[in-house]
Length: 238
Image (cartoon, rainbow, N blue to C red; front, side, top):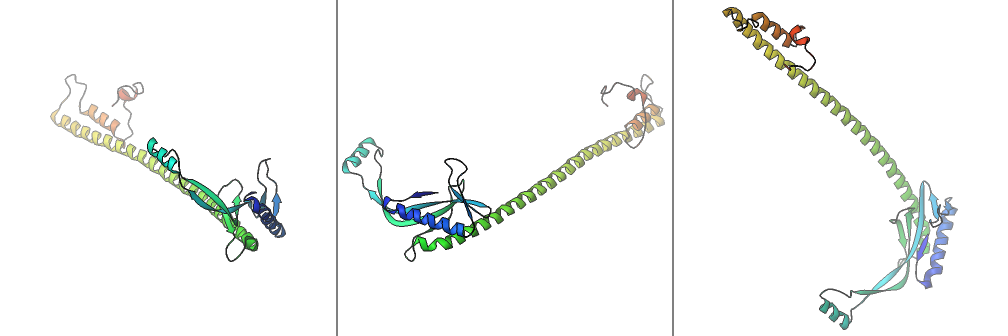
């Protein structure tokens, strides 16, 4: 917990913090010292840990540059001297709650024309409770969203694996179709060899040889061709 106020309002700031602590402890919430030597004291409210800060609002007064400073800026070609400010205390205090470890004010209340800060402490505590409840619900929603996202990602991965498998199967089927087409072309050629009594010049390739090659290529026919199957693996791609 910290206070940033003028000397004239330091006692009031301490009294405001004390009133807040008494209201919180009276409502059943516990006050704890920081875990580290320089850690802030905090209040455990439901599942949240909150610390508090009091600051005094200030009125800003602009301090114009002197003629000498303006002239020096002009000679230098850049703003060697910049606009100055004086801050005057306003006696208006503001108290803010921070989640431990955060510099963002989660809940804030302050003096106003109609009511002093002290009279707003009970309402401030109620707002703190609502903030913690809302944060808890949001945290649970984030957990559920992460779980749902994980399920969706797993489903995407499953579908992607199915698609990859189907793609590999399609490649296999296309390869079979290509081999079947080649086999049928060979069978047509074998018929021509039969009709015209053709053979190769060395008498090795005839209609029977071509049909055997066609059956070996045909993925729908279980056929062994020693000339090909007895060759070393990977030798002479066909």
